[in-house]
Amino acid sequence: MDTRIVQKHKLLNRWAHWVNFPVLALMVWSGLLIYWANDIYTLFGHKVVPTWVFDTFNLKKQLATGLAWHFALMWLFSFNGLAYVVYMGWAGGWREVFPNKNSFKEALQVMLYDLKLSKVHPPQKKYNGAQKIAYSSIIFMGAGSLASGLAIYKPAQLGWLTALMGGYETSRLIHFLLTIGYCAFFFVHIVQVVRAGWNNFRGMVTGHELIKGEGA
Ligand code: HEM
Image 1: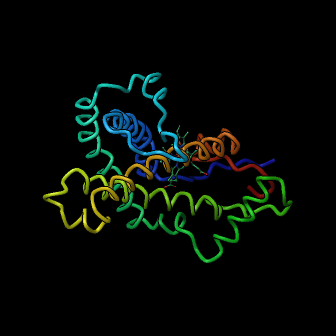
Image 2: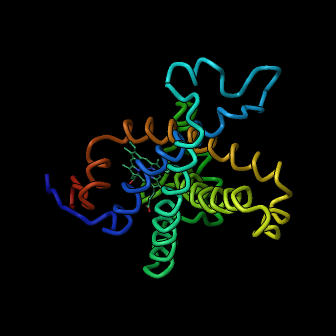
C-alpha cells in the first residue's frame, strides 16, 4: 500500500495554536484567582464555581497575583490571536476554517455519525462542517474575550466599548461565559483529538500527515 506525506498545517498556525494553549490555560487560572474575590454567578441556586474548586486548587486570597498575571498574559493572548487571524486572512487559511452553506448540514451528519445514529460517513477533507463551526466560533470567542476584557479593565477610558458590550455588568458576564465556553470546547476538542488518533495529532505538531491507501 502506498504511503504519502502531505502538508496539513502551516508553521504559523501551529505556533499560534501551541502558544495559545498554555497562555489560555494560565488566563483561566489567573481569571479564577480574580473571580474568587467576588464569585457572584449562580445557576439554579448553586454557585457556578463551587467553593471546593477554590479550596482544592489553591485559588483563594491571591487577587493581586491573579490581576498581575491576567494583565501581563492578555498581551500575549491578544498578539498571538491577532497574528493568527491576520495570517489566516493573508494566506487564505480562513477558507478552510470558516463554515460555508453546506457546513451546518454536514455538522449534523458528523454528529449523527459520531453518536452512531447514522452510517453516512461525512466527507473527508481538512475540516468537516462541525470542526469549521467549532473552530471559527472559538476565534470569535477570542475576540469577544478581548473586547469584554478591555471593557471591564478600563470602563472609564474605554467607556464607549463598555457601552457597546451592554454595560459593565453585561461585559463581565460575557467575559465569564466565554471562559466557560473555552472549557466546554477544550473538553470536546480533546475527546475528538484522541478519537482522531496519532497521525492527526502529529500533524498539528510537525505540520505533516501520512496518507495511506491506493494512489496515495
Ligand atoms: C492539549 C491541548 C490541545 C491539543 C492536544 C490540541 C490538538 C489539536 C489538533 C490535533 C488539531 C488539528 C485538528 C485536525 O487537523 O483535525 C487542533 C486544531 C485546532 N485547535 Fe487544538 N488542541 C489543544 C488545545 C486547544 C485550545 C486550548 C484551543 C483554543 C481554545 C484550540 C483550538 C484549536 C483550533 C482553533 C484549531 C484549528 C486551527 C487551524 O487550523 O488554524 N486547541 N488542535
